[in-house]
Length: 179
Image (cartoon, rainbow, N blue to C red):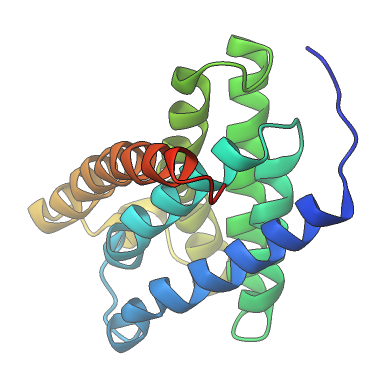
């Protein structure tokens, strides 16, 4: 694992991508009032993995995913401190897992894996904080409903789709010299 220093342009790019990620994932705002576990995660999964993939293709440095998650989480903090912790912790944990397995972002497999893990790992954090804040048992949070299984499966599928779309879009942007 090689640690590379971040340049100012890297930090600016990460902040801009976090802002764009927030704007695109704002489509979930109308469903925030629906109390169905995993629904918000499922709706935003494709955006998180897509933007994280493109970001890591441009800035393949250790800590880039965590910084992207942090910058996005800072924006979300204004709406809910829980969303801050959930987003930041899932990005940090995804980066740790990928660094343990791949030792960095040298290959496309590591980049896509890291990007896809963020929304998937947000599910357990969402359940945990829902239990803590609402004082509910785990069975109450997940509601033992087939719909919850669908939202969790949808989160995984849309996360993978976003990662592969991000790879394609990022590849085109690299060819065009934009990233």
